[in-house]
Length: 103
Image (cartoon, rainbow, N blue to C red; front, top):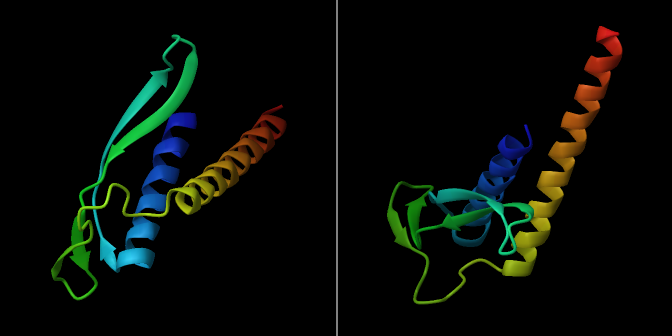
């Protein structure tokens, strides 16, 4: 459940930033890492996001223009955190209700 929520929050964040900042729908390759450098549990996702996408009118559009980051990192981080925590709270509430009902 946790990893599904993590991937979902990443995808929804990337998708919303593509449309809101550049007017395009883009894709991504996402890789789950479950360990940190010191081999402690540290689940996180690395993404490769192309600097191109399809605009709402169906045209191919370049959105990178040589920049290292083409989305505002702090805004994207904040949006991801909010989406992930909201979905995690919702899932835990549903799980709690399910446990109460089954008892």
